[in-house]
Length: 107
Image 1 (tube, rainbow, N blue to C red):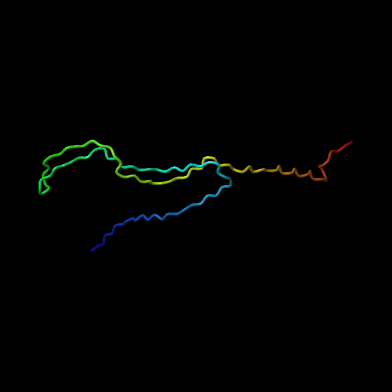
Image 2: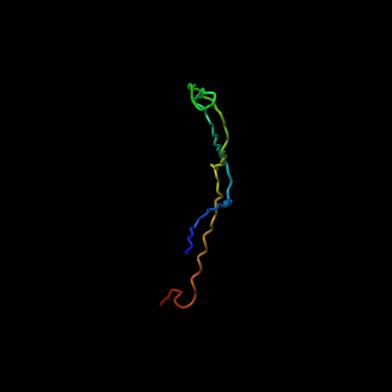
């Protein structure tokens, strides 16, 4: 008798927040919000038999109204980011080494 097996892969996700730091300041930013609206464009009215199994009559009413509205997400977009100017000073040139071959020979 041989035993059979199967491999089942289960994926589990763990949320994590990553922080990225940069130097600077924001002079302009936008708040973008997504509004989700459910709009009813037609209503179908069905007249059913007393036991609810047979459709006796049907008519369609064209309409337009907001059934539900919700804000899904708000995102912040930084538009005017000012970064500080990094000032670098030129490195000093090291003096030439003194000794043999360093100077100019005069005859």
